[in-house]
Each structure stands twice: as C-alpha cells, then as structure tokens.
Image (cartoon, rainbow, N blue to C red; front, side, top):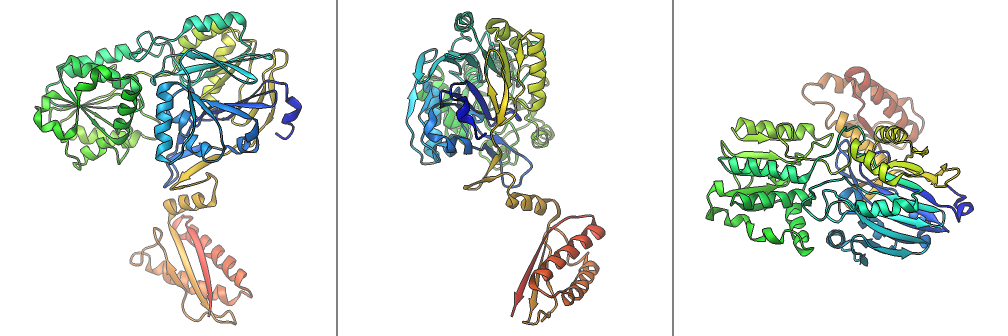
Length: 546
C-alpha cells in the first residue's frame, strides 16, 4: 500500500501473518505515522523437503523501520517469537515482554549470536510507546505470563488478545484478569482482535488442573516405568507433571534439548522451584528402580530426531519394556499423523501401554472454545470484531460467532490486509504485499523460490541430467551422457534409455544454436518421460562445446 501517509492520523491494523494459517503471527498497528509490532512468530511446513520452518515477510517493516516504536511480545511460543532472530538481524527494534518471555527470547537470540535490548515489564502494567498507550492484561494460556495488549489511542481502544483461554485452574500463575477486562470494557473497546484457533469447538477448553489430576492418577496406578511426551513449550503441563511425580514419589528425567532448555529458563524465571529436587540427570537413572522413574520426553509429534523416536528405535540409553506406559500428553498437529501413529504402533508391538487424549483427559487446548469466546465478547462488547490466529475457515467461523454475539461490525482479514479501525466506517482499505519465507539451512529464501520448486520435483519424480558434447559446428562428438537419479534404472529401464539417447541424437542434428539444443532437448525428454512413465522429472541439459 503506497498511500499509507494519507492515513497518518488513522488507527490501522495490518496482520502480516497468522490470518491464513495457525502460526507465523506478525501483527502491526499504525497511528500518527508510527508502527507498533505485536509478536513475530514462525510456522512449520511439511511438504517442502529440507524446510521445516517458515517465516512471515518483513519487507513492510524494513521499508518503514524508522516509524517503528517497538515490538510487544505476548508470550513465548514459537508461533509468536520464532521470527524474532530474523527480524532483529534485519532491523533495529526495541522489544517489550514479561520476565519469562524475555528470558526465553534472550536464550533464542543467543543461539543465533544476536544481542538485543529487551525491556522487561511486569504483568498487568501500563506503559507508553508514543503515540500508543499500552496496558498488558494477564490471560491464561499454556505458556506463563501470557499478556493480552490493550492499545489506547485518541481514535479508540483495541484489545489484542494473543493466545488465551479462561482456565479456572491454570497451575502456572493467576487466573485470567477478568477484573481488568471489565474495567477497560467500561471505557469502551473499539475493536477486539481475537484468537480463532478453536472457533469450531463447542463448550469450554478445559483446565490444566483437571489434566494434572488425570495424569497424576495414571502415574500413580502404572506398574512399570512411565514416559510422558508433550510439547516442551507447555510450561503448565510440565509443572503439572512435576507435581504428579512428587505425588507419586517418583524422580523425573528430562529428555530432549528443548525440554532441558525450557526447564532451565523456567527455573531462572521463578518456576519449577518446588520441584527442583525431583529432577535428576539421566546418568543417575541406574540409582533408582525403573518403577521410581518418570521420563519427560520431547517427540510428541513424531519428530525423527527427538528423544522419543530415538528410544523407540533403540538408539537411546533409556529403554522401554513390556508393561511400561507411554502417555502422549499433546494433540496431533495436522501433517504429523503418520509419524505419531508409527511410533504408537511400534510401542504397542513391544507391549508398551499407550495412552493419548483419545483415551483419557491427558491434554487440553490453550485456546478458547465457543463458550469462552462468548464470555469474552459479553465482557468486552467491542464495536468491531477482527478474528485472527487461524486459517480462513477458523476466521470465517469466528466471524459467524461474533455476528451471533451481536457485534456491530465484523472484518474478515487475510495476511496483508490494511484495516481501518474507525467507529463510523471500519473496513479493509488496502493491502500490503506479503509472502512466506523458508528457512533453508542457514539461508532465508522465498517459499516460492525456484530452488524449492525444483526440490519438490526431485522428491516426486527424480531428475534426468543430460550432457551433450558438441564440436564448434554443433555436432555431437559422442553419445549423450545421461544421469537419471530417482527416475530411471539402468537395469529395468534399459530400453527406454536406449530410445531416449537415439532420439536425442536426432534432435541435436536439427538445431542451429546452443539455446535451441537445450530447449528442444528439454522439451523432448519431458514429453517422452511423461508419456512413458507418467512422471514429470526435473530435466537439466548441459551443453559443452569442445
């Protein structure tokens, strides 16, 4: 959007990520020519070989760097902080976060050798990043110190919820600060920018306290060794499991780099202190009976390099035996089903008891279901609803719910929408160009890059590499050299290779330039393989003139 200056005194909301997917959250607010960033996350991807993480495009922020007053980070989860190393290696931007979130970010930035000033704020406090007056409001989530952000301007007040739920028994920290929500609602809320993750889920999300009670009961009744796998980032779950271990007089071994990292950050931030003596080093396992141990492991999504996968493959010093119990205290993220079920099936074959959220109350979501959304809207009574944090279907369902809650104006956004938050005529007034970026090794490249397109083709259909040796008169000196990794076999496809070589020689004779040799050969091979094998391999033609 080129004419942003025309709206200098307007309050604008610009989601650069997180409104066409669950994850990659990056939100921007504009007022009086200044920009406020809320969160900068990453996301996961499963269909691009070699790429596991994607980032939002920050081009808009780079172009407007001098206008940025700061970035407020609602909480520590990767879909809200995972993009910070890329952001802070590209632009200079002060960060604002609570103690635990700040400590988590510092540890993450250290991995990338990035130093940044993080301004630590107390939960439920106010501060000003002119022209924005900001108030953090505690809401419960699976990460501690999750802070919604009240943004106050002369054009109206916006409540940006971040990830939240109304948990009556959150285990870590206080319940959601409904008193503050009600207080600021009385002053009037122009817009509610709200989490849509569970818009399709009826009822309420459930409590970590109830999950802890169920886990404690299972752990106390188990006869063998117990392994629980969960998201390392779920601090509330880790706290509950450590409590359950104490109640069952068991020692806890933490497995996995991220599990150990989160535990140490939690300790440094004032969490897990009562359970510190419960945790032992895995080298101390031999000092205790197997029935006295509770293993907390990474790998709940079937990650092949995670601790659980290594244990299942018998590549780990921790061994599972018949009558042991493995609890998957997590949900299945779409795309990970096969990897998770493969592990479960392997465990069952070994007579290990497997318990998941299908059988028992061992997991609950950190996001609001329909009754919690209804309660939030009844408290806030916004003039405008802006659903975020979801795929288009989640955004649309949330909008439908907001309409049933009698919200006067509902705006369904997408990544790059420029939303005018105006009490009289709120609307999408333009778009900022956005795209996805892929972390490919140490490089950050567009997800639409030809490199990744070629890699997909290689994975699906292999490649055919042709080397043509020509003299100065563009005549073949020798038979074309073929390499066909992942596409053709020298043994079973010998007749096809012979036909391919013969026809290539004829095609080269008909060409009058190097470029026509390349294009004609590529076109022929592509059509030939499509016809004979119904494949579309990557075709590379190299012409060497000698």
